[in-house]
Amino acid sequence: MLRVATLNCWLLPHPWPIGSKHKTFRIQMLISALAVSKFDIVALQEIWSEKVFIEMVHNLKEKFPYSHYFHSGFTGSGTCILSRYPIISTLLHRYSLNGFPHHIHRGDWFGGKIVGMAEILFDSYKICFYTTHLHAEYNKENDLYLPHRISQCFEMSQFIRHTCGGADFVILVGDFNLEPTNLGFQLIKNLVPLNDAWECRPNAVDPLYENGTTCERPDNCYTSKCLLKSFPDGKRLDYLMYRSEKTEIKLLNCEYCFDKIPESDLNYSDHLGVSAKFEIKKENQIDTGSQQLRQLSIEKQILTKSLKIIEEAEIRVLWDRRLFLALCVLFIILIVATTKLDLNVPFAFAFH
Image 1: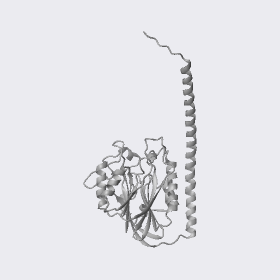
Image 2: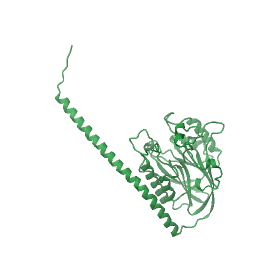
Image 3: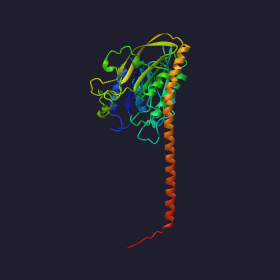
Image 4: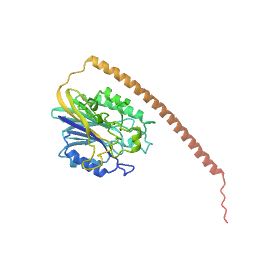
């Protein structure tokens, strides 16, 4: 059996209200929960402080003797992996589009969003384990960062396709900042391709959990009431996806984890975690030519829609560039004009 979990920990380094609430308490409770958990591999996002990561590794070294933090950008990617099994090697890819540097009120560009890979030796099987945290949406009605997320999804799908060749099976987890109906999610799901563990779970019996929402939920103490007006049930942003390669893996269940802190009214995070349990079955069969042709047809449809969004974004960026260039020229003219004016106007001092 292989047990995997992912959680966006919401550990922004700034003090509340700019940053996260109850950070110290939630970190300690999360460490305690991980210490008694049955998970084999855990991926965490928004661990912005390396000091926090080192503290977690130190306290969990007996439970998770192997770990890796993916360094990127000015503040770090915030993504890390804890594993009970040996991490053979790691690799990361920093996305080409990561937001705008002049949007200093957003931290995405400074963090440097990435997709990280860890090759993990699970018994005699090699897992290509991927984790990511894509650019946030911020404003659904005027989503300036949609082209960035589309680009990130495409780059991630290509990165996975070109690095998972020697794996027995592939697992991708993280905070995608995408809902299942979004084009970016369809890119990830179909271009690699990957199975969505929540959609494929055999334990789908409770109607309260059918939507799979993990963020901005009404039962989370950190959810703002104003957010519930637009999304009363919350959003599904966190995912656990998988694919058999050389070896077939069977999904046994997929469920929430790290919800309410025991004996407390607080949650571990403003997100819920997602976990899955897999059973390793047998050597996998190679796809036939007809299956590959069907896959190519799906990829073409999704890529055509994605290219349209990217082209529109390129036009918008081109006009922004022209606007800023025109403003620079105008300001230079004004500076030169005012300098000449100062030279031609005599100064007079009057003393009374």
